[in-house]
Image (cartoon, rainbow, N blue to C red; front, side, top):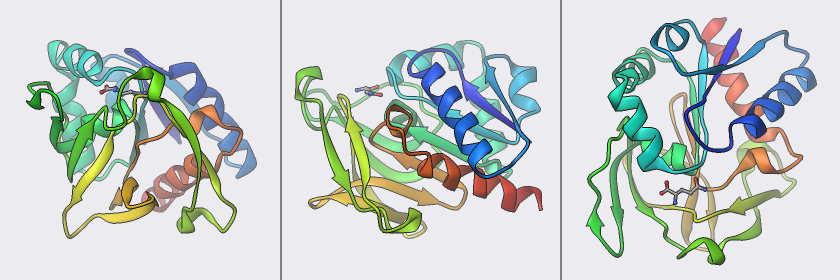
Length: 203
Ligand code: GLN
């Protein structure tokens, strides 16, 4: 199993580390690679799109044309985990309260509407304990950094978690998205959930 971390910008090393921890905890012999190039993205079995700045990640991957390949591979069934900016890139519809509908490059495979920067600016970042039943009863520490929220979901999208009445984690088939940063905790359960999707696919 080869898991790729899209390595243009953002919390790349943190995902690398957490994915290795998750694989080890599941006793799975897998490789985790930082990927940037077309040929690298072609050979992975699952992709993590990190948090960071969605406009930057989107711009780079449309300039080097990997955005099309990522989209195609996801449509073919490759599992993907998008966190924060990564979630934004996966969404079909994205807006910002201040500027309205955004004009940025998106992978656009998830039937959700996202509001970017929904909690305000960097200084409005925060942490909160979340209930995410699919990964177990123990609460998950959600780290929200200039985070988006999911405002609408289509019929094929499963809501995995809410913070109050705001949707903060979703799953559509093998596509998992979180508004928070699971790689910045010491809890590998979201990464394990993603790896399970890859296992199901490879079986
Ligand atoms: N606000 C950022 C964006 O819109 C996301 C922040 C993050 O990934 N921590 O891309």
